Structures are given as C-alpha cells and as structure tokens.
Image (cartoon, rainbow, N blue to C red; front, side, top):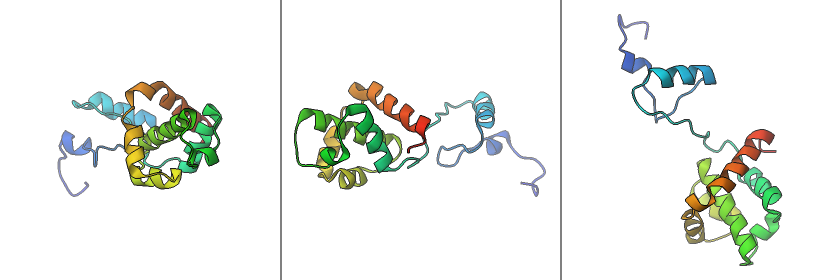
Length: 135
C-alpha cells in the first residue's frame, strides 16, 4: 500500500471472501462507511461439533450418545436437527455433521430444511456457545 501514491476508498474497504477482520469498533466503522450491506457472521468452525453437541445436550436434555444412536424417537431427532442447524451456522459441511452424528448425509439434509422453524432454538444454542466459549 505504501508504494501507491493514492489508494481508492474501495480498495481500503474491500473485503476478501466477504469477511472483515478486526475488533468490533473497526468493523462498525467499516460498516458505517460502506455502501453495501455487510453481515457479521460467525467464525468458521469457531466451536467444535462436540462443543455444539454438548450445548444441545444441555438445552434438550438428550445425551450425545443418544444423538449418535440408531433411535428414531422424535425428541432425539429434534436434538440431531438442532446440532445440524447450529453446526451449519459455524460453517460445518453436511458430511462432517453426518459423520459426527453417525447418520447418513441425506438425513442431515432433511434436518437442515427446517431452518426457519427452529431459528429461536438455534439462537439459544449459539448464545450458550458464545457465553461458555464452547466448553
């Protein structure tokens, strides 16, 4: 940047892969000066699948072992669905989620179709992960 005499505003505030890095005040400054809508997302794989499952385990009162079992009880299926939805928020691929849950990737695809219906539950688990740091 030093080699250039002038630097266009667009070059300063350009994002790579639609990601901004910096502290919250810097990101707020960039958002204020940008003409485009900038969404602040979750860091990719910020929390492990095990940490996500533990948070769901706490919230849904379903053990991880039950989530990884062959049972088709609706309460267990709901917990798997919630793990899948939260894992997608953190950038996990369907195949990775399926491997962790010991399920077919097609099952995870079905779980992920219910994003809107489960939005509040997903937000609650994400809040728990952010509060506890995923431990």
